[in-house]
Length: 344
Ligand code: ADP
Ligand code: MG
Image (cartoon, rainbow, N blue to C red; front, top):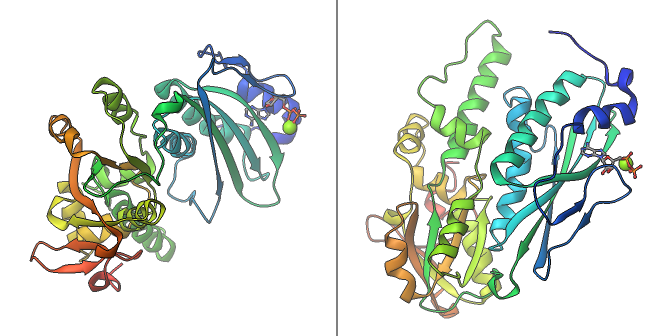
């Protein structure tokens, strides 16, 4: 494969090269790439803004993360935050800093993933910034979205008696990470050995190519549901539940047996001799949605197999509790509950 040095293009040539095929698809994108700033008009709706910074070696490892997947994921994680406000993402900006270790072809691959996510989620790339870095790759994405003011869902508005729900399944991304880290270690010790990731494509896909839950927000809209609180699950279920409980000044009870864990993730966890529930509670990067609903909405969500009801909101004095499959109660802590603390 040919290698083009970034220096051959220069900053402006590189920006032109990376963004030449961008076509704006949202009416809200009034001015996109090419001027001093983008202009967005949400026509009476309110604007949601969120940003994330991803640093090589801290947030991602290029030894096992294909650049295309990285581009895709760096967009998706931001869109997930927009959906978590019950909003619709409309634009992103993408800023990158790359060292001379990266060729133009490598950045092309990264942008392939970026554009693929933009297309899938219907968002426009309307700007960014490009810089050199001394070492490594740094990515900053900002996402904008729109929402009717009366539909915004915060973390702080859960009420006693509300149902606690989550989308999809949890823990998979963390187990995927364990596999990739294990293979990396083996590779570094003996580079000739082929990676053994046979049969683990589900959990590895959960880590490397997560999706944001656009479908769940659309389901709420169709069913006329406004969750009483919501956030996305990026740090593990326990940590996010504690955030909602703190912000809403309430307690909660969840049931271990109700926490959704995919069969593939369960089997993979057993290979590492760790508890799949602990992965769901304390693993990160699932990018599912955690939300609370009024009890009247129960019948509507039972129709949707992608939503699990896992517990309910209580008064603050009741604390934050998980009831295990064996019927024991434990306090929920940010690391999962104590029995599993040393296992992950
Ligand atoms: P400025 O000098 O105003 O910062 P730049 O020359 O950096 O402008 O950028 C020119 C245009 O290209 C702007 O619209 C900017 O938002 C956009 N842009 C710059 N870098 C990127 C990038 N990596 N991805 C997408 N758009 C970019
Ligand atoms: Mg600039």
